Length: 207
Ligand code: MN3
Image 1 (cartoon, rainbow, N blue to C red):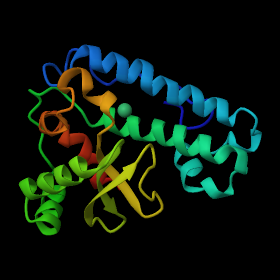
Image 2: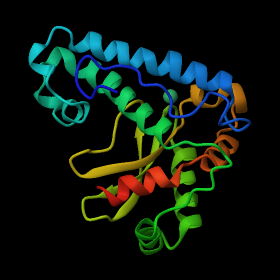
Image 3: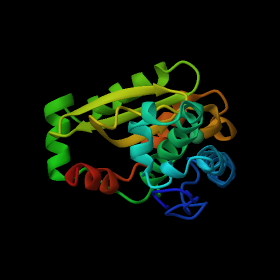
Image 4: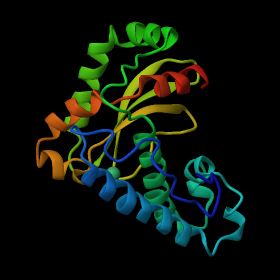
């Protein structure tokens, strides 16, 4: 994806049937080709009238939100956040057969900060299921490599000045309704089996 204006919709790094049966082709088409595309288009629309914004990266737009012209702030917050969150979400998924695992350094941090992989996932699940309405749950690292779990409502992002989001769970209903209806619990378990820990480890090791 272009990391500056005009932002473009990047293709998924896998085919539409690769996450089946846990996430269907139909869900991926709607989620990526329609929902995410709309965020990209609306972000560009919001920035159209602001030439001085056109040299800012997506991360800069989101961390400098309060310095942008006031008329743009809501549009950039919602749509820029929507682009950022979906890009992270789609980038950390892979085939259920991929058999990836955390790197040695990420695993050591998981053990230190959560007491083990299963405990990290349990805490992430609690936060993801506890998010009322629409939003996101994340595993983030601070600059020193300390891991934590956090959650945001709507399309907000974690504080990118402090944290590097390593992976995220989209808990908007559009992410799971076709496949799981109201069963966010089952969607969460399925999604965890699709996480590409090589990509997550790479973000952690290169933070
Ligand atoms: Mn979504």
